[in-house]
Amino acid sequence: MTMTPELFSADTIIQNATLYNPFTCDWEETTIAIRDGIILGFGPEYRGGKILDLKGWRIVPGLIDAHLHIESSLLTPAEYARLVLSHGTTTVIADPHEIANVAGIAGIQAMICDAERTPLDIFYMLPSCVPATPMDSAGATLLAGDLSPFLGNPCVIGLGEMMNVPGVLNNDPDVLAKLRLCGIIDGHAPMLSGALLDRYIRSGIQSDHECITCDEARDKLRKGMYIFMREGAAARNLRDLAPLADCRTAPRCAFATDDRHADMLDIEGSIDDCIRIAVESGMEFEVALRMATLTPAERFGLHDRGALAPGRLADFIILEDSDLFSVGRVFKRGVEIRDLPYSPPAPLRTTFHCRLPDVDDLKISGAGPARVIGIIPGQITTRLEIRDVIGLNLPDIQSDIQKAVVCDRYRAGGFGIGLVHGFGLIEGALAVSVSHDSHNIVALGAEDSEIVLAIKTVASHNGAMVVASQGKTTVLPLPWGGIMSDQPYPDVVASLKELDEHARLLGAIENPFMYLSFLALTVIPELRLTERGLFDNTCFARTSLFIKE
Image 1: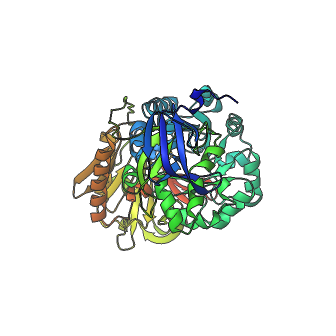
Image 2: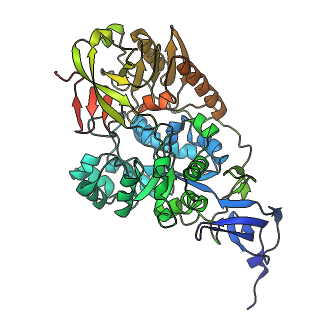
């Protein structure tokens, strides 16, 4: 058979590579040929172009994050990409429901447009729950008809996490209409089991990233769900779930970072960090690599990536010569990624319409058994704690019980007041306009006057993270929709460090803003606080602060 020279003509030849193959979960010494950003093939018969001799160094496919919210990094998509590309992540599956809750369709469009400025492949799942539940008050309401125009966009590949579990189980017409939009549907079903889980899965939902225990994950895996092992900032579930993964289950398991601030991404990494944690937790290295590459590609139908094979994208990492998973060089479509410049995003401004509280508004009358939100370290779930309190003696520093406040940022509505145990503050206050998922202003503190100062500072910036003490504030402005910075990621990381240092001086727990930002998330057990007051997730209804009310 006569072969034309073009069959063997490459623009890049990588020689002496020790290549990880996720199809077989093993390593092989080989030569790799690349042309026009695509893997041409393997072997010595390929010729031409640039020669890169790896001298036996290891090479793995580009990493894929199966589920995250870019907004939680506090960075715009292009700037987020500039950060995670350096850690070997070349593809992400993002759910923009945070900005959609703030700015609706315009917010989703802004995320898609900004993502076009980066070589990182950002695929979006349409936000299924805006607002998170019918009882939440967000900046927008999106129905199936609002989402359907996005379906023709090649970067939109499915429906994002369906958090409205009661809506699914009760055949809510609006929920069912959204479930009919896409063939790929992500789930969100913490602690759901038995017949209710069966019903949830029958609706067409295929994955879950909310598992906390191996038993929960194994149950969902056996019923056909993909399991995304999450390792975020506040929700750290990977170590507990790692024993589930082996060569048999890896095709249905992937990694997800979900919610990580820019400083965590900068210092600890992204999916590369998940690989290191998984291996430290006893997972086989090759299994972890499979979960970070081929599994998410296959789950989302991205058959042009996830492995280095003929016809697939030349997205890959050259690892440093280390026992750890350490990213050396990163290539996207055959081109090395380095020194990407910062460029400012187009503005996405939102105006805050708040009725701000004063000190008198924060007074709590009454006494007796009260419902208190208990923080669980390493989890975004909370405990419903019953504590005997005296309203006039709150906050109670001795018992580590602080006041929390959620202020409506959209309609100049009211504010809810609750109590939180486990935050550690002995003075001062924190406030932020990143408050999943409605993104009202949420604040917590050991002194009423500092709580008021922190809230007013957030509102005056039309979005910010604030630490207040002794009448002074440390501030990170968040002008992009009130939940993201428009600054370069090194500047955001530096500001986060200042905020954390200030909060630490006040006694706060580690990652205080990440815990604070989840206090209002009504779709996570057990007790939450919204602008309308306390919300009990176990019965999916509002409740009172004092038991006897």
